[in-house]
Length: 361
Image (cartoon, rainbow, N blue to C red; front, side, top):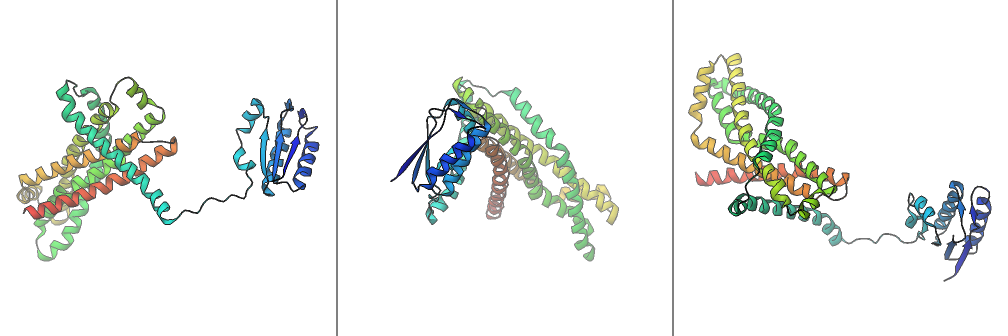
């Protein structure tokens, strides 16, 4: 394999750049497969000289010639750090290896499995922090729990109230269109109350908290992971998941329950207002009909769903946030994946609740 060495003068600046380019062109014109740029003698250089050197590298790449740079000073390396030297010095012949189907599928599945592993590990650590750590004398930080509850509950309160009221109106409108044909307007209260308490209230509240608090937790913990604050806590002997995750998970579980109750109440009020305005149903009669349609078990089931949904949102957001790598891009991926995975799991778990309820009854 032929090789040509191009030695550069001690000065590589605007005066000597044209001559250096001629030497490079002559070396490339000899048909050598490898060219060595010897910079050991270079003592002075400026941006024009470095531009000439980069131009020579680009010419070599176009001709599929492999270039080796030798004797580069630290000052020149700092300037070259702005450019991908590996890309310019490559011969241009090598093409990325074509992956087979198994490799492509594995490349897509591996990040998903890694994310699920992080979520499961966070869930196990959360249970450990709730059940085992108190037995060892490590109490829950109530001050951190209060801060997390304030952020999750009061932050989502306005949007939950607004969506609950509007959904109550919408459900009442849809029910009224169907029921007025049969003169059964009063059963509008049954349809709104049962659908909101059983399904829509816990489901919508969980989704809202997933989009708001779940993504916020992922971004916060992801920023801490990128800044190596998580590693600093571990070095100080602090169990990062127990210290950071447990208060967030408990706060979300409580917030989804509390906001779910508020969502149900506001939705029923919205339906009652529509019933009074459109069908002339007295609010007292509407509320009495709603109470007859609901049972204590309805509220217990809704509360159980809400606790599970809140815990899932907290575990997913914290689990993906703690595994962030790669700076801001990793944080954005973690926040997006948190919302998507949380909503998916909420719907799957809700389906399991419905299936179990039907089997039990």
